[in-house]
Each structure stands twice: as structure tokens, then as C-alpha cells.
Image 1 (cartoon, helix red, strand yellow):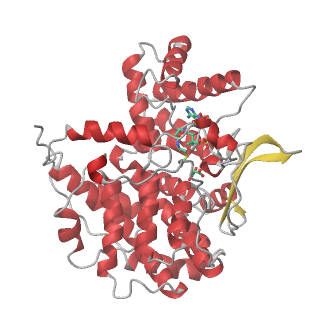
Image 2: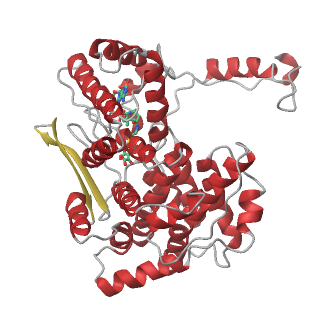
Image 3: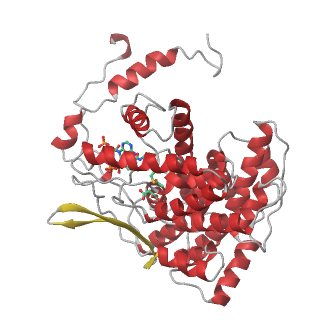
Length: 452
Ligand SMILES: CC(=O)SCCNC(=O)CCNC(=O)[C@H](O)C(C)(C)COP(=O)(O)OP(=O)(O)OC[C@H]1O[C@@H](n2cnc3c(N)ncnc32)[C@H](O)[C@@H]1OP(=O)(O)O
Ligand SMILES: O=C([O-])CC(=O)C(=O)O
């Protein structure tokens, strides 16, 4: 008997055999009943299930019912994210707090409003009394996303008014969560490093006067040290990850859960759980694992033929994790380009040149190019582009940010978007989200126990 789980797991072979046999849905039923698989129309576009003023993502236009690929655009509250980036970079300041204000409240802050908001975020950074000891250090996790999800959920118990879903109270909870995510992930990481990897335990208090990006670097680095360039690049990456329309999986999860009228912690914990998945935000870690696997399995990184053969092997499910996916490539909306990947690619190139890692940068670029060619050749010029997760990990690696923090950093950047969508839902859409599933099971009769 295998006792690892406290019971004899050989019974699971029988149970999983039953579960597999009885949970197969015949593929032809989906077209027979016109099921919108993955909430997609037959041309791959998303089924329209809501309206939003928070953000917009475009990657194609529809001409005579046909999807025509276009360059990707990402819009926050009506403003092109590329213009936002240009704006704060020209003024040589951080952008994440400004973008969080814009997403949450719907308009750009003036100088005084921005200062006030930064001070408010800074003042809420410390976790409630006992939270670090009882909720993080006493229950470390190998995975920081699970730790974060649990930290969000238990925040309910520390809130004197957790169930009030008035906009005023939900905004208070949103601001507190946004401010506390850096401490939750930094302490989650430190606890993991100490209890699972045997490293020394470093607990740094958050500093209210720092920008969000600076505060994160201050809290995750053993010596608190970071350069202004490192903080600027992390800030840029956070701005680019902050929002992606109502239909992305984690934001839609926020909508689904919020539509029941439940509390903020339940809704945001669901979003964190969704983002962890390797087809969503978790792809940034998967990309790094895939690149490591590619480096282990090809002899010459600049040999296009060898690289292409290996990528085809991954796509055939014969290599890497057997999923058949080239992580960091492809998107539900973008076709020709993801504007965030373009900006991160530029940063990756600059950093690689500075840090003598151009050979690696060229490997990423070749994987991107070859994957595009493979998809174009396989399906009548189908367009596929690198997504935000393709270059972000390489950038973080060059900033010496530990790999297990990549998806948690994504969550820390995306929480303003999740909260903005939750507030929009509470303010204007009272309908519970409840699509339909058609039963395709034939009728069966109940049979008494001793006759089976
Ligand atoms: C923050 C983010 O969430 S960005 C996305 C991060 N995820 C990844 O990088 C994982 C790799 N990419 C993917 O799995 C997909 O491109 C997704 C999940 C992002 C989008 O998937 P879809 O919306 O289904 O994309 P699309 O409709 O264009 O895909 C059509 C087909 O191409 C396949 N495909 C798309 N991208 C890839 C890829 N990178 N590798 C292999 N196959 C792919 C899809 O699996 C799908 O196959 P199917 O028809 O057999 O289901
Ligand atoms: O929009 C999506 O499907 C995925 C997402 O969140 C992103 O790309 O940032």
C-alpha cells in the first residue's frame, strides 16, 4: 500500500478509469449543438458577453464576416497604452500608480490627485497584525501563486466589514489589496526560499515612500538593493500587465464570481487562481522552463534547422511538457502583434546587449520567428505572434528576479484591472452570469444496490 496520501492510492486507478470513461463527450456533439467552445464564435472571435469602459484589446477587424488580422492595440480607459508609456517615460517618472488610478477611477489624475493616491497606496502596504506570522510563515507554499490566493482569501478574516459590496467599501478593499500584494508575494517568496530551499529568511518591511516597483525590489532583495534602471523596467512591465479587457480568463473569472454578489476576497482569489494557469499568466514561467529545455536539447542555438525540428517536436507533443504548446506564442485576440511583447522585446534587447546575453536574445527571437513561420505554413498564412509572456521572463531574469515570482508579479500588476472590472460590474450589471450546458447523457434508471 502506498501511504503517501494517507490512503491506498491504488484505488485511484479504478476511479480514474471510471472517471475517464464516463466523462468523454463525443467531439461531433459540439458542432451538432452549435456549442460556443471556450465562449468562441466559429471564426475564433470571442462571444460578446459584456460591455466595458475599462479596457480594450484589438488584434483583428471583421470584414464581411471574415477575421482580418491587424497590428495589436491595447487601450486603458480610451487611451493607447503606448501613449501612456511614452508620457510617463518622457516625464521620467513611474507609471504604475498613475495607470492604477486611471483604471480604478476612469480618468487621469492631476498632479495633486496622483500624489494623494501614491501616499494612500504607500500607507496601506503593511499587512495586518499577525498576518505574516500566522498566514504566511506558518503555512509556506512551494508555489507563490497558491500562497497569494490563500493570502487574498484569508484577508476576509482581517476585515471588519468584509461582505459590504457598496462601491465605497469595495474600493477600500481594492486599494488595500493592491497595496498589500507586494508584501504578500515578497513574504510568500521569502518563506518558500527559507522553508523549502533552506535559504536564510529575510523579512523587510514595506516602505511607504517608494513606488510600487521600487517597493517590490526592496522587499524581495536580501540586501534591499536595486538600481533606478531596474525599478523603471519593472514599473514598465507592471504598466503593460495591468489590464486586458473583460474577456481575459482571470478578469472574466472576477466577473463570474462578482456577479453572484459575493465578497471582494472571493472574487480576487478566483482571479489569482485563474492567472496561475500555464495557458494564461503562468505562461511566463513555462516560457523559461521551455527555453531551458530547448537549450538542453539542441546543440547549436543558431542552427535554424535544428531549432525548427525541435520546435516541431514540441508541437507534436513529443518534447518538453507534452502539451503541444509553444509557450509565450499565440493569443485569443492578437494576431500580427501584441504591443506589450514588442515593448518588452525592445527592453530585452537593450538589457541583453548590456549584460552580454545577446546570444540568448537571438535564441528567443529565432523561436518567435520560426514559430510564426510554422503556423503560417500549416494554416493558410495564419498569423501568430509572441504574447506578453514571451519576453517578460527573460527581462525579469536579467533583472535577477527569481523565476517563481514571475506569475505573482503579473498578478500584482493585474489587480487594478481586476478591481476596476469588479467595480464596473457592481455599478452597472446586476445580472448573474449563468450560461447553459446541454446534457448529452441518455436517460438511465436508478437500480437498487443489491441488483448492481
Ligand atoms: C497573459 C496571457 O494569458 S497571454 C497567453 C499566454 N499563454 C501562452 O503563451 C500559452 C501558449 N499559447 C496558447 O496556448 C494559446 O495561444 C492561447 C491559450 C494563448 C490562446 O489560445 P486560443 O484562443 O485557443 O488561440 P487560437 O484560437 O488562435 O488557437 C487555435 C489553435 O491553435 C493552437 N495554438 C495557439 N497557440 C499555440 C501555441 N503557442 N502552441 C501550440 N498551439 C497553439 C491552439 O491550441 C488552438 O488549437 P485547437 O484549435 O486544437 O484548440
Ligand atoms: O487577453 C487574454 O486572453 C490574456 C491576457 O490576459 C493577456 O494577454 O494579458
